[in-house]
Image 1 (tube, helix red, strand yellow):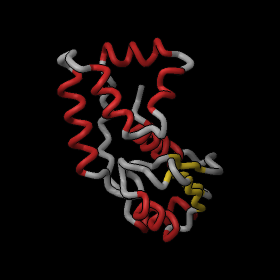
Image 2 (cartoon, rainbow, N blue to C red):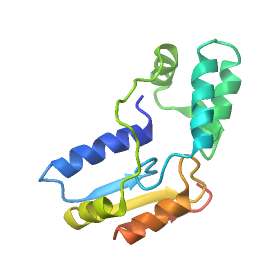
Image 3 (cartoon, rainbow, N blue to C red):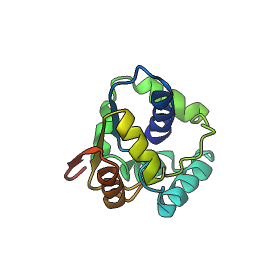
Image 4 (cartoon, rainbow, N blue to C red):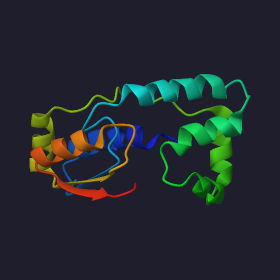
Length: 149
């Protein structure tokens, strides 16, 4: 269970290094097109610290994951719930890549080399969706924004 934003960051770096990459799609690009919000970092750190105690596990999961999914009830219908349970039991892996927002010139270079589509929900809470949309458009990316997501 690698967080989506971290997986996206790794995939981005692999894609731009791979000459055969012909298209790139960025979904919920946390930390690439805009800085991660400090409030979200506080929430993530709080969740990480208190979830290790074993107290209020369900409430902590609902509070943390509920801020990132449109419908927290959808987590009850996971196709492979044992993967979520294993992740909860051992903790998420650490990815040693700092999720810094890329500067506009770097984004323009990537987009010029690889046609890029950025998909984001207007309710994105890890980063500022308006800033991410603006940066994506300035750098020449195609942008798809979903309402209520």
